[in-house]
Image (cartoon, rainbow, N blue to C red; front, top):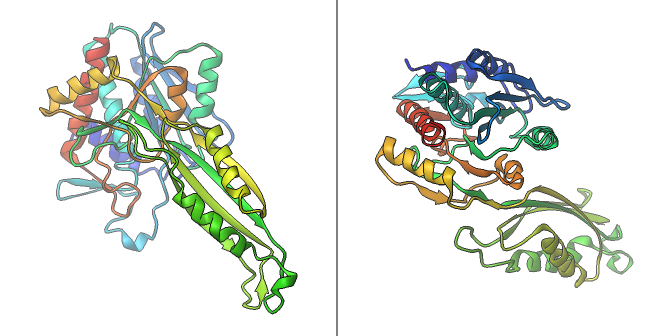
Length: 375
């Protein structure tokens, strides 16, 4: 049984549902500290953050990951307990197997192999881990980056071990991500009796044409790396539950996944302009989850392409699809950022799993990337 598989099984056994780490970071620090990695805890509120670094010279290569996992969902829907790693048909099942304890296990053992073979490697290697990625991500990587920036600890290359692969390990790498902007809208009406609508103001009726306009708005046409920006409504709530009362207000939540053709300020301005056309009273609160980023073809992308070709024998695809990741907090520092990890078909689902052969393949790819850049 491989070291990567053994480590992954140990991590899955820890019930680290966000924002809990459940001791995962202690396990990883204990493995790498004997290899010359400094162990620094940068915890904020209920979030555990770990910064392990070997070396002080540039360039600095960082593996980034999160030890927290999403909730399991109904336990009865799982074929085996989600926190009891179980092997069936050449796959390892368990919550976090693919997202993203599999990636973490692979890059930890890849680092161990690389340091053993290249104890005098160039530059520095670091591991950044948080327990607040699957949640609201307010006390995790974003706070660690602030600390690093304050002490001028500059990251040159960052590889996020998120499950980027589509059909087979390494067939897709993420070289960027769309931005994510959330809106919470309250439409203000006047509550009243349905028999006397002239004495009330129905916020549902007021908002209906604005909703159509928002969802039909052509925000942009995308570009060579990103699809067009889209607005999606995720929740609408109104009414008292009684059938004879016109509600006094409506609440709606929406999200825009936006590309590099737009920015936060432009989206806000255009959204308010659309709402203002319909003449109702409203309050709109915004929350930016992250701006879009794109890593141009450079040393990190080239080293990754070469490593996947060497280990797997095929070319990889540069892509920017999917949701967001903690890479959005690293990219603004000027670092080159990519995401490369396991196949993502089972992430966040019941019976989450990873192929056993893919674990070794991913470990070898990570090790080869390090060799391409720092050997």
